[in-house]
Each structure stands twice: as structure tokens, then as C-alpha cells.
Length: 331
Image (tube, rainbow, N blue to C red; front, side):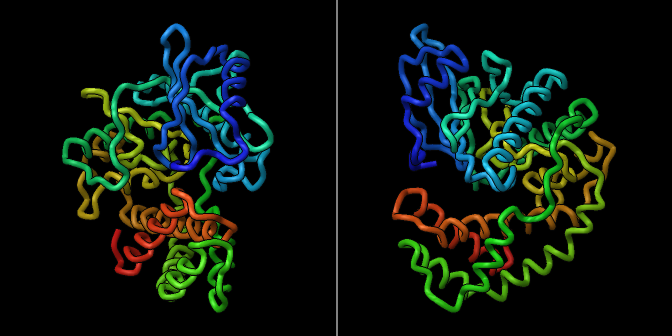
């Protein structure tokens, strides 16, 4: 996130770290990386370092429709990440550090929640970069191990919904294309873009609805949800998965479409490791689902009240890219 969270002060974060984790902050630096959470690099007086996140409880629709539901979903996700690290012994899982009371998530004010993670010295990839053959093979191995851990940690893990978290918002936007949107500087450009692609987007939604039952009929595994290059940290030869707020039980293809190319690279390797064949139809479904989820999320943001900020500009540019790619039928 490029913008800092509205209504959230760093003094509140310092207090939460002191009370929740006994971290006496000596230095704190905002890190404008990733999406969906706000990040800080923190150092205490003894030189120990942590990576700290703050989540907006109004901006995680896949976890729930209310702040209490989102907080409960976030706690469940972090508990699952901890179980993967501790009980399943998956050392590629970057799990949160439990606080003084044993919980990995602490609410701060009415609208945010904080979690603390180990500080990693490596570097993450870029969201849109292509996997090299060795990287693809390494991630297939990691995802196979994750999915095979399901019997150890599935109890209490939430089931990831098949449907789109912001489907109602996208449907409402499609019904409202006949009049200008005046909620902010990117609202009308977003409306015009969506209007030009309306038939294609409606067709994508129809295809999504037809294919959803195939995904629902698939066996479930414990999935990360977003194992793209931006969520893979590289420390020498090690590869580690970060950002576990999307973890959930789902068809394995929810993860695999990120690493198995459209020509099938990695499919045989995964089947050999797990004994489970990859379903190309479900891969296609989750590839479509990602595009529609992005469109609905960006449209929802730009149709609502907003100003011209780094994050809203990013949402507009990302919406254009996603719609153009989807209109052309690309990935």
C-alpha cells in the first residue's frame, strides 16, 4: 500500500507493540510494498527487527462483511499459518509471532488489526514477473507440501468461498453505467472503461457462474490463495511464502494456476508429488476468478468516494490493465 492508513496513527502502533508483544520501539519505518495491508520495519533498542502489518478491517471482504467478522477471519488465518509452521513443520511459511497472550492478531482502535512477523533479509519478487523454470519447479514443490499438510491443520481452517467477495458491488456498477459517476477523480474514467467492456465482463460473469459448480465439486486442500511472485521471499536458495490472510480450504487449483502455465508446465511434477491430477478446467476457473475479483475490487474502490492518491491512481491503472487483458482474452 502506497498511502498510509487513514485514521491510524503510528503512536497507536507503538502502544500496540509495547502492550501486545513487549516490543519497545526504537525505530520505525513505513514500507510501501504489497497490497491489502500496511507495513512497517521496526527495530527495538537491542537491535532486534520485526516486520509489522496493520490491516484495515473495512477492506478485506473475503474475510467477512463486518469488522468483527473480518477480525475473526484474520485471527483464524494467522492461527492456520502458525499451525503450518509449528505442527506441519513447513519452514517456508512466514507465520506471525504470537503476542504476550498467545494471540497473533491485536485489534487497534475500531477499524484496524496488527500482527508481527519475523524480519526477513531477502527480497520478494515482482507481482507480474514470469516464473523461470527453476522457480516454477520450486513453487510447485512448496505448494505440493502445503496441500499435503491438509490433514494436520485443516481443523478450524475456514473454507475459501468460491464466489466473488464483491460480486454485488460489480453487479451494481454494471447496472449504473448509464449515468456519470462523480465520486472522485477516477470514478468517471472507470465508468467509461467498464461501459466499453460491459459485454465482455458480463460474459465473463456468465462463464464464471457456469463453471463454479465444477470447482465446488473438487476435493479441498489447504491453500495459500495468492502464491504469486510478490508473495515469495528469496533468501539465498530458500523460498518462503508470505501474506497468509487469504489461506483457506479450496481446490488445489486455487494456488496452482499461478505456477502451472497454460501449456501445463509443472502439472506432471505436482501429480507425482501428491498423487492428485490437476484439473485444467478448475485452473481456468480460478484464472477467470482472479480477473473478476480484481475488476470488482478496483471498480468498488473507484465508484466510492475517493481522492487522487497513490493508491487510487494504482487502482485505476490496474483496472485498465485488467480490463484490457480480459477483453483480449489474455491471462
